[in-house]
Image 1 (cartoon, one colour):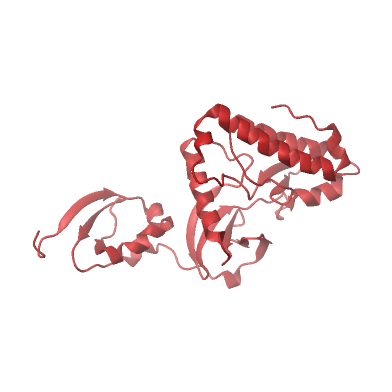
Image 2 (cartoon, rainbow, N blue to C red):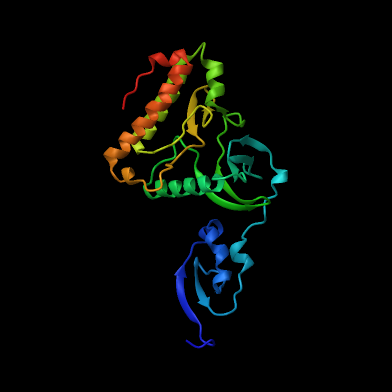
Length: 258
């Protein structure tokens, strides 16, 4: 094909996918020119020059995280408030080995759950990516109590309720157990620091997992079988229960039902 001819083909591309997919950053290097989408459809043309539409790739301004409050920090990620939307938060991977890899693995798992139409009743919902002053930010549901405050971690709730309301603590675990086994949601690290407890106006608690969702194996062959997947979830859940039983006497009366 001569250099004067353009190879054009129609591609269906949703705007939010252009936002959230880092592969889009590689398009200019591949000699691909994009034109603004028309009803989520546009043409990709290949030649020696390449131009990118700012209107397509940057539908909203950059978020400066210096203006955002830190609401949580883990080993590999920092969590910020989302400007103008208290129901969302932004997670930024730390510049540590495997930090970004863990984040991308978690995103793929959320996409897998979305394809299966698994409800996010007990896990913080994922809302895609956004540009920030520290690079790509990953937007999640911010778990807040009825009064608007960020919900406490399970380890904090344990310290508060262990003496007076141990049945409430066991009820939180029972609700998580039901969710994992009924929806076959696998996890790799569900410890008391990775669970938050949302308190409603009546004072009852509802658990949400905010970290540790997904799998760490390179080829999840066991996940292709419902029976084997259930066995994997059971092994990991029993391991977490064993840890809690060693640390807390009120766990002695907890009964595994799945």
